[in-house]
Length: 288
Length: 280
Image (cartoon, rainbow over all chains, first blue to last red; front, side, top):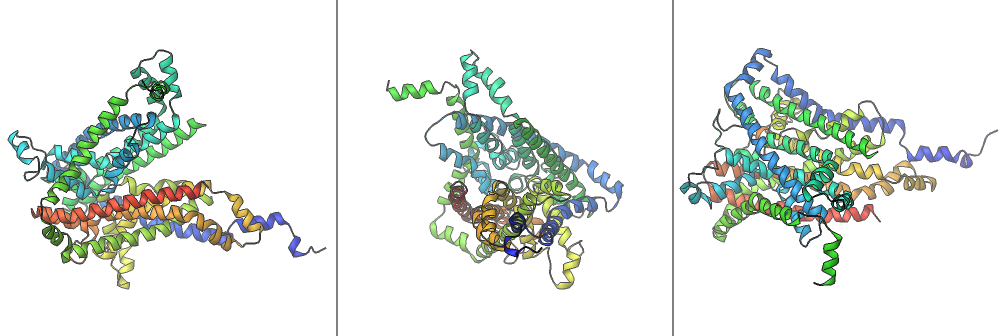
């Protein structure tokens, strides 16, 4: 017997109109996949293909060149100074903002976000105008023989500026969610302020903290615009890895050379993504 | 002692507000506020007519036009394809989904110099993709299009990651209700789903646009940096500083900073608005 159409299987009718037809679904997946392939996958593969395009020997020669080694060293040094400083700041800011109420908190939060919306180039220029030879503090710095701009301290300052919000931004919402009950309990039980912080507060935000650190580190090692404004760009002395990539690209070196250096930074990106995925998985599992 | 103060002190026994807030404000001042003040003070040292000329001469205007136009086009591309990616990642199950999801953050993690380097090669006339476009007279590298392509790469995660959490928490009951009431899938999508997503898509658009406006690292590789043609505003700041034209650099930097503060303000307002949409 044939059922009239209007009363047939309301359940099925609902399902078919809350989902796209398979054709539409796979078409959407296809278009999204194509876009991702062009803009995400191909650029990544291309770095490695171009780097090895003139052979493994050439690749290795570029990496062990003294300019590359010096750039690796400077990049690591800059990150080793700027990331810990931003971690200390991030933890302090998160503690004050998440655990206490005070006037002007919203303004403080806006200021913390500020470096994300300032162009890195403008950030670099600010430090030149502050500490450079013609800058506001220039005469004073010169009188005390302190060199900041076109020297390593300038690179560090510019890097700290552009990576400033990462750790704080990651920690503030997590600490706010956790409230104060655990800390209050620890204090009631006789723990000191520091003990409470080290043994109660810090362990409960550790995954968020790691997350902030790896993002901060990736940006610190990869920053280009701000650093290029304050570096003298002398090969073997004041080039970070990203600056060396540009120099090799514009110079008369082998066309594969900038890509060889770029593979180091691409691997940094891949490690960062891997750790990020791992941390997300880990913190989700701990939440239950 | 006033009673309300006593209660406030009693209700929060945690130590360290003075120390942490003091350090936060000191560090913020040294790293962010004093440098911003330095730019402002240096700009105020110039006369208004001088500043106006430096900020609005023909070369600077051409640079703003390209910066704004390319950032807008890239943010628009990302609003479309980024929203599509977010939809596909949240709603469908298919092989490679997790890999795709992980790859979305790649532009956040990859140094912009490397992004510019590889995109310039990919879209140059002999590159893997440029080779396909060149016969059609389309040049993806060393052109204005190149600027849009690089900014699309840089801004992509903003659009996807802003929309994804909203899509995951979207109440499917509303869609079912629309379907039961007789709406077809397309009608449900257009008049039920799209209005809910729009404020958030707009926020993602704004974030990608703001990022694109200030971007320099990737553009310097792919655009060719020709004045009046493919020179963006941040590049002009760099060029002027390289020529020791401090005033010229300040003029353009000031305009860029005003743009970004105006955007920050708009975005804060927009995010408040879209939150209101999500929690009725």
